[in-house]
Image (cartoon, rainbow, N blue to C red; front, side, top):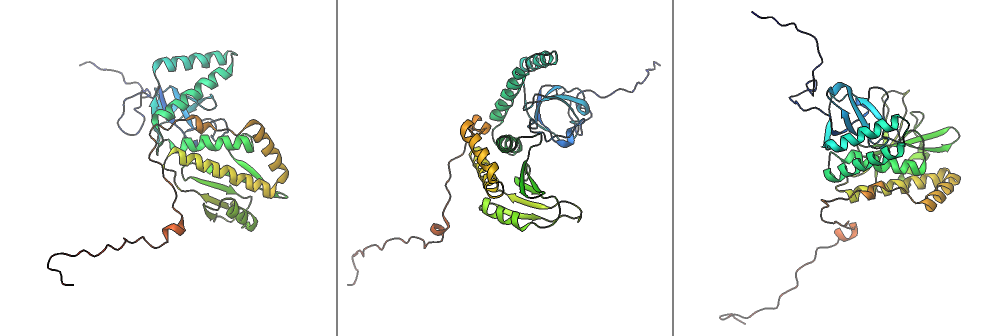
Length: 309
């Protein structure tokens, strides 16, 4: 009888992912979230939450590169995961070569341009849908933050008064613009301003469970059905934030307007072609819908044989 020694070894490929799957994640284009981050939580302005897996033999210790920031990260992809696409071997080889050149002091802009081109091509191939919606919302809101309030986080800060600063960030899954206040107290001035700035949206007050927690408001938008509607929503968010600046920070509003007017607003979503765009739709005015339905015109009487006159 022949015996074999058993050594503890890590499972390769995706054996440590729940379910039955034997494909390695190398070359996969994945959507990642804060829960996947190992070293540092996400949410930075440079990242878009879409990455190419450079080395994915072990799902719990995958090495990826974010297509927005071109930063190499280590993620735990053994949990819930969305794989949008796969890149070809030559593309992966070129990415690895650019990463090595950048690490040796090369030009980082070449890596950033190539990564973002890969990301845009993947989004175009995948098309607009439930799997890509959150990434497209993040890309669109990132442009707004860069134009209005560029800092490390993906949010817009608004000063309502002395030591009254609220931060607005976009909930990509819930499709809601969230305004966080420093305390749990209700802010009537903020709520009144939001009602005017976003008249077509559904405004909700956040009721914290813990009195010590922060409060705020949610501005909920209807679910965009295609890329054109998503671009329209980004425009509504931009206009609403401009209105809040004009109301609470007129000086900042003037300076931001001048810069955007001079250099133009960022519009990354305009570079993505929607190849499966549905038929165009138009809103129906409430006054028209409530009007009396049209009736058929009366037909003239026709005399038939045997008809008594």
